Length: 616
Image 1 (tube, rainbow, N blue to C red):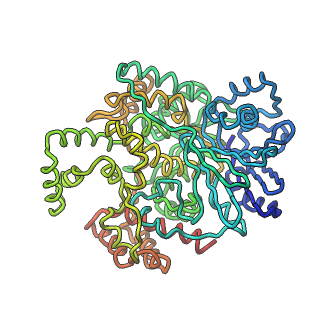
Image 2: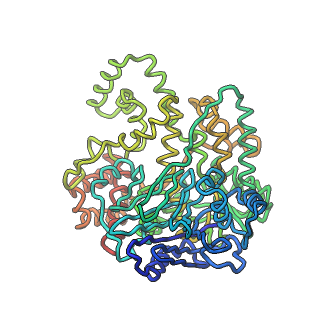
Image 3: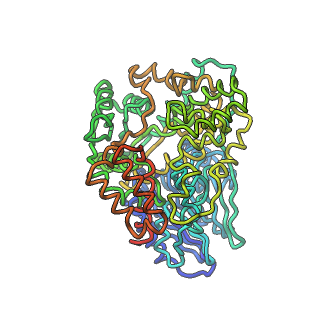
């Protein structure tokens, strides 16, 4: 069940019914088909519903038989049919077919322990009238968003931060001290946000809230449990079994489904499974650019033709790309400069013309070792083995003092432990240089302080495993999952992610490194499965992500001037050194430096600030 929710716990007991409706209206894109509200004293819940499942006339929000348990929810419970059977046998009476109602009765039966029984991607809040408290949780992967705000005797929560703007007690303040962290990571890699007093319930956490306050606890963690005794053939068969089962669950729908297809191994596997289920009726959806060298559309069409299904494509022009930036930053809630968010928005809008739900291939890279930089660990492993520590320090210092040459970055980073070297794989701005781009010094924590806890949990694992674990708890949650959820829901399109299934994860967490990554290839066990069902070209397709022609566009007068105007704005001057950021732009245009990521990171922040602090 895909939807968006909002809620309020107001200790003053004020009537929040009007505020609740205004909050829900700001996220109508998450649920344009229906709405419902519940108010009882201090507690108020609201929901906007995207009709994936027929409610059969039931009122929203969903409640139990005596209306003492009320729920608002976003997402899907994969094992809801099995749980429904168990709960029915225990005497619970259902009035809808929704998985949301399964959560209601599971809470009645098991309380907080219900979370150990759930398999799916979800965030939800339950109001327990008898105990006069709220109970809520977020799925173990953090696929569905969950934000909350605390201030002035009020606790607000919802699927998107923008809903808080409608409440008069929401004090909108920028956390300027987090700008340096954003500049490094391109997101805030923990429970904090760029808004003061606004936080995230993290992946695998639940909360309880009553008059005594809010308490947040962890109920699950994605942990590795490596089994070195099995062959890659065994793991291939395990992946195949669990992945196909997850696809079957995700394909159980009362409406027509489609699939996102980039032609890479993950989306190709999803598409192939859906084709086996739906045959030639299945539609695949792809996005690319008018600049063909950056586009995978030909490969997507080639696979679709081989499978005998229709491939519906959308080509994003440079004008369309830049026209959408303000919309993208608004829907993301927080500044996030991953350029792929823009084509995903256009892909979602085009797809929503045909279907209301798609399946996609997110999660495989993090769980099974799909990123190319994982291979770098193997090179460093050998380098550290044959090069003494004092020699690595000497080489790093010498390389730093020299002009750029092939291997310079490798030597400079060779002295760093994985906890620091990992972060620098994706730095937008290096710590040592970011201050010169700020309008004034902003004291901040070093980037590794944000991931220290994550790495501490896997301190005894090898470097590749550490990186995967860190990606699962940072990059996937705060970038990959966030942009897919926000961009698809901006178009009122629901998405299922079969790789992000508890049973699939349990397999992934056992696969030894040698069956995940080697010097030449990533995601070895997944590719072994893919070769048995896909054309070799798709099974061996290297990781591309969403290539974007932005690097070239920024050198063209029209788009260069859009950025230049933003960099010269009053808003930019509040936070950044205009001379330095304009130099980044000029050097990029004149091919003196490749500054695309830095330029785009700064521009997206300025656009986001305009959307949330100037326009609204």
